[in-house]
Image 1 (tube, one colour):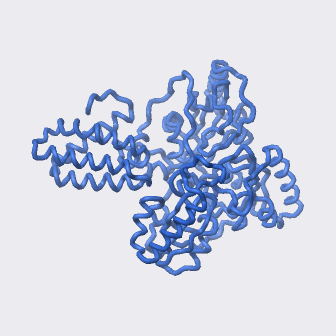
Image 2: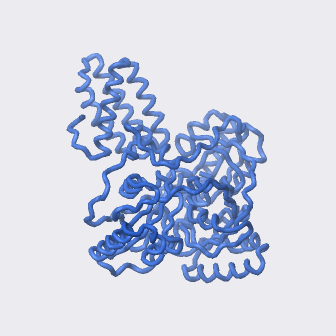
Image 3: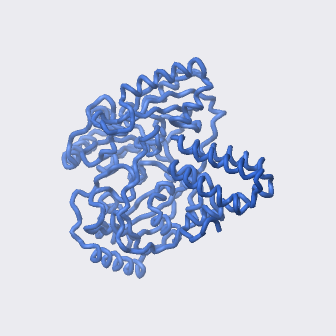
Length: 515
């Protein structure tokens, strides 16, 4: 939640960016479904995939949204005039050229790719999160099927036709820096991290680009003015901490991969040229990646409508959320044991490690002022109200290391099912699976009724949950009841039936009721 200036992890219900609308043509997927589809969401979230791409757009493609991006970002300002078939022919011609000369990828990307954000860097996408890429399963299928250095077949998404090159991960390096964010009309997702002391941005992309060039010129003349210009011009809420991005490994999953790509090419204290990102046009300066002190936190995040004009938002207004947050904090001060229940209803169940630059703006200073076990005051961020309880850092698990290979589990990992599936779909699956499993297990009347009851209660519980991680808790509790009810041997048979059913659904197999 606090690890990024533009976190796509939910700070509460409803704040997570929505997946793009799928609008594909008639090109069959060039690769079969990968076994990564059976992996848990936790495993995919820890996995980064390095890749570059060439994008060829066409008239039927999504006309504005940036490719392979979850936040709203209108990167393409002019619709393509190329028909679908003509675009496919061009993409296939480029693929053939790359088969013959794969070393020409960067040059061909620079000259032919129609992704403005990556074209100048030879199509480099940086460290893509596997859990984010799973929104485009045909893309992750392609990257899972090729080795580093290899070129993919043509892959279609709603943005057009892609040719991917799987890139090897770079040598591990820590990166740190600051940024100036210049928002504009084409990045409405900035509202989730817009600084709260200013009105929403009202400038065009061209106006932001002109301003960025002016600021870079000032910084080239006097780099020491960076902090001053952050305060005067940056539209991001992290201007509260001087635009500090924190310290990151270049192999970590982040929501600002393009920024880290640019930062890795800078010397210490060097200022970047303006770069296009999902937050707006950014200017970076690289800082020494010195070690920073971490604090442990158990966090409660209550979202609110980030825009006062969002009258159709399901989220409460800022005023409503503030009232609720103060009520919740009063309850927690009287009875801290209620924190877990509130986290189930809002966010976030897992303890967090906060460090300068890697915490919600304004929240870390508040945490530093309280003792272990105490709660912070309510802290307002751009899209949520934060209440944090300070923890002894020794009680907080260390950050898990990044995986650099796409997982290929032998069987389904149910964490992925319950974390990434809509509650209504989970409930429907539960109700459909129960009678089929009951028949296959040949349960007598004495077991059939409680067996059905466990599944019915689980389905109802799924429908009432808002925090995805809570679904896994409910599922595990149901599994324990079923283990006691069925005994070890029959429970093992039940789990095999469940795995078969899930695998059939994932890979689109014809399974009848249950294979």
